[in-house]
Amino acid sequence: MGNRAGREKFSTGLAAFFATLGSALGLGNIWKFPYLVGENGGGAFLFIYLLCVIFVGIPVMICEFYIGRKTRKNAVGAFQKIGTNPAWKIIGYLGVLSAYLIMFFYSCVAGWVYSYVFKALKGDFNAISAHSVEAELTKAVVGPISPLFWQLVVLIVVSVVLICGVKRGIERVTKTLLPVLFILIIICAIRAMTLPGAFQGLYFLFHIDFSQLTPNIILMALGLAFFKLSLGMGTLITYGSYFTENNNMITTAIKVALSDTVVSLLAGIAIFPTVFSFSMETGAGPGLLFLTIPLVFSQIPFGNILLAAFFFLTSIAATTAMISIVEVLVAYLSEEKGMSRTKAVIFNATLIMFIGMLATLSADRASILGDVHIFGRTFFQLFDFTSSNVILPIGGLLIVIFVGWVGAKEEFRYELSNQGMLKTDWLISIFYFFIKYVAPVLLAVVFLNSIGLFRI
Ligand code: PHE
Image (cartoon, rainbow, N blue to C red; front, side, top):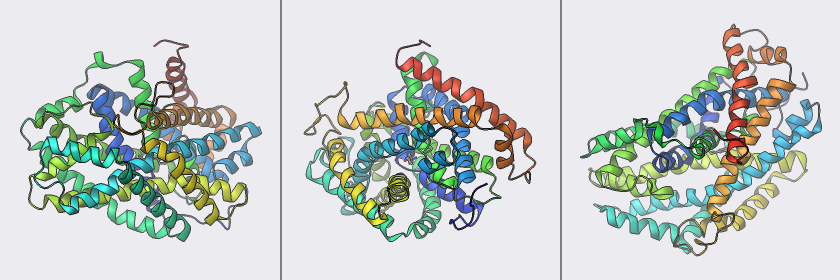
């Protein structure tokens, strides 16, 4: 069983749930989900996304919790401890690689969010029109000084939190602020639904038109599920390693996935009615959030304050998600390479700032590096695509194969039933089936298809 003593744990199941939710909720829900739904045809994409969450996302999440709690180690150390073959450590290394790739562009987008808090407070969006909101976005994104400055601020904030070890404090803050963010998104969604033409937006979001589906869209939906639920790179192995013995990991996974989905849907309900009401493009891309939300709030009393609050809370959600990403890097460098935590944080933040600049300077067509393409993608798109759509799903595939085919079913059952304390055998059996057969097959098919070896 290994040494279970002497390692910190979340005090309760609820604390574990909120901490995991703190990692899951972030730009994936509020920024990426809406723009990908918009670019990929609405309801049909949403439908495939939900299938990915149920048949792949939740099973992978359960596997990560299981590996983490069983070994009580970080992602690389965990596989070293239980891996029958050292090659499984590759999962940990891939996780480290994707943590870097994600941070390169995530810190850039988080910078835009931070800057919008100040813009809203300054009154830049007072009674703004759809046209000027676009000009504001260009200023914030193309820069180059402003986006680079805000990216630096983001990395400093994340570093300070990680160095001061106030993670616990942050978790307490998250617990109180996440519900407030939830309420604000609801207000936003209700307001958006009262806009003229709102129905068309809802129709776009919920109407399933299968003729829209292409294999590429399925890959995007799968990648989004991994990104949004923080899967495939070991983050949740680390979180699982802090779970208590009596945490019901299956229900925790289901609750996290459900809450994460609800927040995304609410963001979609706030955004798409606005898109249609102001005759904007559903396929506006990464700027979608920043083009629509200011308009939702621009015509209501105290709109400024609500807008600033919305972006402030979004920046908190993004920051807690980033903390969980950088923690993968810090835990690896400090636990496996013997670097001090402070050094590891500063080293990572510096590296992320330097390479992350490439993402920031290529985020828009008008950006300085906006027309530099590598394999047909800008730096920004390349970091995003390779992490979400390639490395995270490969990590996920290896994780389910490891649990379903290398590990013993009895051990899985023993750990997930909390040493037999929980009488949830049927639930464990269902998810074991998903882990062993459904998730690997789906992942393999989507992959082979995306590299052209197999056509759906
Ligand atoms: N899930 C986070 C979000 O939606 C991003 C993330 C990805 C966090 C991978 C940790 C690991 O914003």
